[in-house]
Image 1 (cartoon, one colour):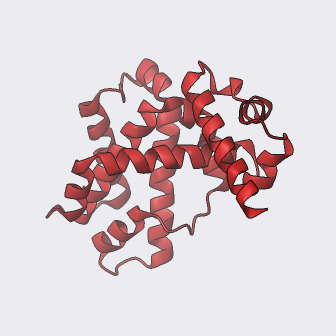
Image 2 (cartoon, rainbow, N blue to C red):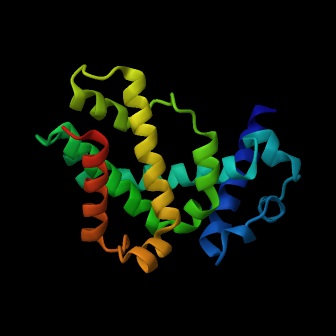
Length: 191
C-alpha cells in the first residue's frame, strides 16, 4: 500500500512538473490534466497533497532545492563574512531571481503560499533577522518580519510586469532586482 502511494505521489509530481514546463499558462495545468498525465484517479491529488496548489508547491520546492544546490554562490554567501542583513538580502535576491525564472509556478502558487504558509514556519531568513537584531526583537517579531519580507517579494514577482510598466522598475534585470531587494531589506530592518 505504501509503495503504491509513493508511486502515485511520484507520478503526480512528475506529471505536474512536465505539464508546467510545457504550458503557456499555468491555468492550463488543471487537476484533471495532471491526473490524466499521471494515469491516476482525480481524487489522488487531494489524497496525496491536499490540493492542486499544494502539489505544485511541492514541485516548485523541488526545483528550488535543485537550483540552490547547483548554485555554488549560495553556499559561499551563507558562509561569508557578510553581515546577517547582507546575507538575508542575497538570499532574497537569489530566491526572487529563481521565482522570476520559473514564473509560471509563481503565478500558479503565490496566492496559495501567501494564504496557506504559516507565519511560524521555520524559514532560513528568520535566523539572519534574529542575528541582525541581536536580541532587540523577540523570535515572534523576527518571524513576522521574515513573513512580511517574503510576502512583499512574492507579490512583486507576481506583479513584476505591472511594476515594470507602471513604476519603471524592471525586476528581470539583475542589477535592478538586487537594488529593489536591498532597499526593501533596509526599509524593513533599518539598523
